[in-house]
Length: 457
Image 1 (tube, helix red, strand yellow):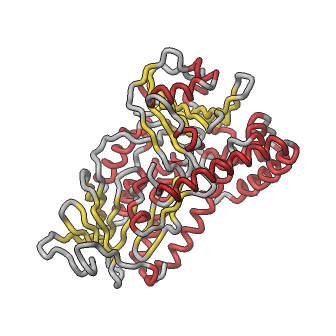
Image 2 (tube, one colour):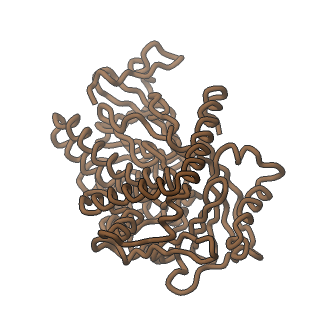
Image 3 (cartoon, one colour):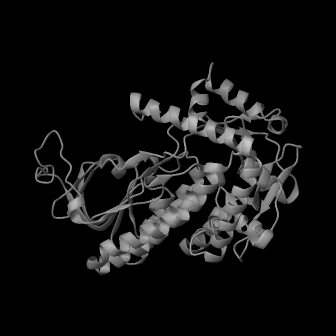
């Protein structure tokens, strides 16, 4: 972005925060500073350190810590290989060979990763994020990253000359380039007013971990199961040690109608799906219940003068197809290459940033198109009546695997799927129109409430 787009932050204790720095504070100069030590932060930090740059990574919590987003995609596997952590992740994870979507007749349709349009890893992992994130963090530190946990970033100042000062843990850091991988905290996006509620999607989630949930048999034992319910969708993710992650993503107005305690509400929602009721018979909750509001959002831009947003700090889409961790690590790997190029040739910064955002947004939009329509009667019909016309079914499997970047043959077939979707919707016009109106009503309610009450969950 042009330097004129970045304005220095002003703070109540100073007329110009970039000039009013504590003279006695310690100053640390580095090539790159990364806010956040999750998958995006650790991935970018590791790769930049390997390129020979001086990298500092700041994480407000301490590893291991709980986090949601436990299902990886086959396209994560090459990244894990390049980071050198594939085997360590495999050893503490559940093997995932596909995703299944139950039918009304009690059966389910499996999208097997081995049936993709073009060759790719035919597997992925279901991970406990406490273990997974710590493996990535430790790997970054081993690569030479100055990783500092329990270090919360207090503020970031942007100078008119492009200088960036990060205040954290009583120190001042002055990086040549800043990466925000703060996840849903969206540190920079929030500070600069870039964060926006996604106008096409509104949802909230309630979830926990259980022991004793019945798993699929045979090859499907590690599948992520995605159930539709009247107010959204439900995930079932088998984890290691006999633990299963179960959560419900709901329209916000449904979540706000909950009565009694959170556990009663969650179980009422889950038990509304007959097959899931059977799978959870006798299951025991082994973790706290978490509720997350304001589920889908995006920032209006990904880059500025000497800074970029990664993963959820840039955009969070509904995790219906387990895309979250993959998109975080994909954005981090590709952005690390971009930053390496910028540091070596600063004159190319604006051009490289524009090129990267166009590239990343195109892939992100492929997931969004399916997510916005997943609960529609048309998509439900197409997923239950699959036909590999012109390779369309295999292209959908590839999309579910994360293969939407640099994938023109796949994208062409996904456009054919969109045409099939449109034609099928015409044949189901009554139900499709009712579903569309309900969705618009849900979005309208959410937007109005944000206007009246702000963006608090």
